[in-house]
Length: 114
Image (cartoon, rainbow, N blue to C red; front, side, top):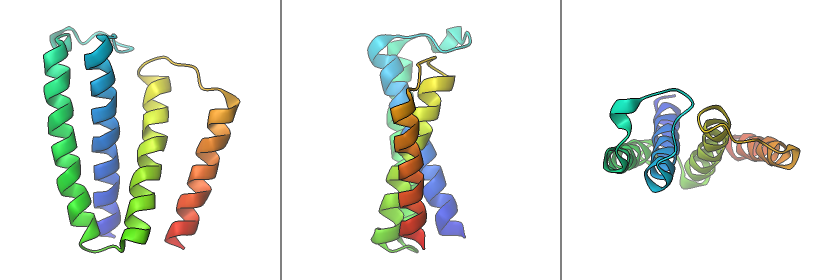
């Protein structure tokens, strides 16, 4: 169970880092005002820190899980989290085709773990 927790933490860190990189590159505001994080360099530094944290968590997960389970989970959960962050934090629309793709990714993750 601990390995799956580390995969989830790694995916959350990777998704968070991806959103932070987007904010750094575009200086786009979040859905709520966080004025102390308005600097692009703060976003960029936080993204690097998140990637580093995620790397360590993923390493800890792979110590206990086979790659054939850990990698699909890490990638799939990250994609799902990025899609949710895109919608909830950045206010992007989510077309039906993307939702269908996320459902297929979830099915693929379930099959990889089974």
